[in-house]
Image 1: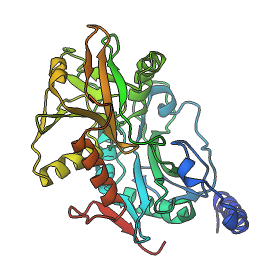
Image 2 (image 1 turned 180 degrees about the horizontal axis):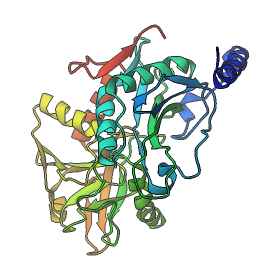
Image 3 (image 1 turned 30 degrees about the vertical axis):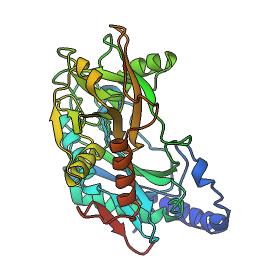
Length: 366
Ligand SMILES: *Cc1c(COP(=O)(O)O)cnc(C)c1O
């Protein structure tokens, strides 16, 4: 006995399968000019938590969800997400970068927002499945593009009273994204503005939740209006130490040492964690600690790091409240350490360099 839903899904899938076959040769994407944006793909995968347990993995061709108008995610922000990438390597194999770390992090975010965590095994199984289903959207090696994987979890229980949901929906969508640096790996200017905070001192900064992004939008827009690519937030309690750099972690190279802010309000970046390991491998000392604003006068390189760009080098940091401009890249070019770290990480992701830490999961047969 099939439920109506299953029959509908099956019919729709047959239809998509037909379209897919027709379109197979029509997937005419200019991979290297793709933006970092959303492009429809063939499938997404979903799983629901109901009656105290996670259900079966569902494959969907729909780009929308049917959500109760009183769902806790809509009213009280019970939403968490992740971002990771799959790459077609030099040897033709498909690699996902540090998927288990993202599985652990979203479970941690869930606990932080009183949501039910997705089991790590289920997370990884769904990542693999959605990649396989959309294999034709994995950009070719050499294009600089990759398949961006976006898992998200939302509370779906209707509730007007403030309480956590008892039912959840976990979805993974994928979309091909272009190379982050279209005009090359060029340093940009960022600013410090004390009138905005991204998160509260003991708040949700260390969880990957949409609310942190909406809280940062005003400042981000303001920075853009003033010609800066990002805001370098200060710690929300004392406004003394460097914190998150827009939606990315901050780092600097000071007298040959890799320094990065240690703070309870920062999201632990998988990219930053990987770069710190690469530094240790290269014999570069790593310090995760408080960094004061004035220390910026003594750094030789600075950058923001995250999955989207790996490293975005920083040219100048303008403190808009004191008027001090910290010129980091004296010749306007990315520094040697940032450049080496960037290329090393990319090389591991693309299978050009040995994956000595076992960071990649190879998806066989696609
Ligand atoms: C996602 C994110 C990062 C970067 O994390 P990665 O795992 O390296 O992609 C940094 N800061 C914030 C606020 C983020 O949401």
